[in-house]
Length: 255
Image (cartoon, rainbow, N blue to C red; front, side, top):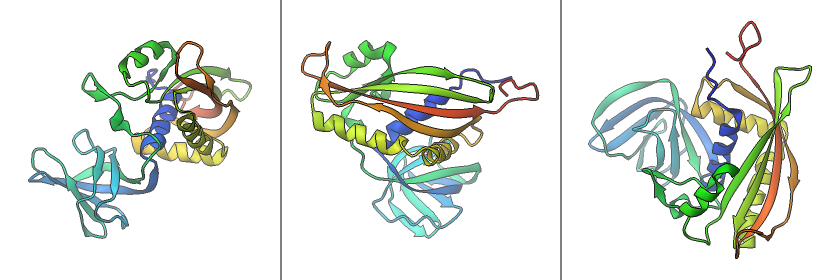
């Protein structure tokens, strides 16, 4: 039976947050993991090209190993280590494979945001939760985004769905808003190339992702103006449209 809790928009929001905070520079697959004396060792399928001090994102391994880390050493061209406090684990295969992304510095520092419920607040939320995010982010100088999405529709090619995402970016700092807008424009303006990046990202989160993105277009981008309901803040709008398909069964229903 299909998992109706899965949505295509979730991948888009998560990839956007990654690009705003730790943009991906390179990616390699992980075949094995180990943890000894609070040192994690990952073995890669191909040479990783990393050096000591590189910032990395580890994903699709498990909740112990996944996260953002700094490379401590590179014992071989296909192995890296980083500090990780945990229970010792002998070398174990990662099925089917994990990922190491070398990441750069983004336009937003996620550590500026508070922790709520044991997790760092991600300042990109549906418009229905706008009041909640405003209350969570007590520092008025920090930017945040709210979004709404609409189903553009299915037509005779009923395996293809189109959705439109509209974002509002809030910050008292116009240059801050413009930096965020430029990241979003650069990420989503490239039609099928943007879709390829999204598909690659989705597979690093879940190799069995049922979604395939076909294209992205930049629908609208407006310059910052004073926010009507938030004194001292500016706001800017940006909208994207994307098309995707989802795996279906023999009857055409979601698989």
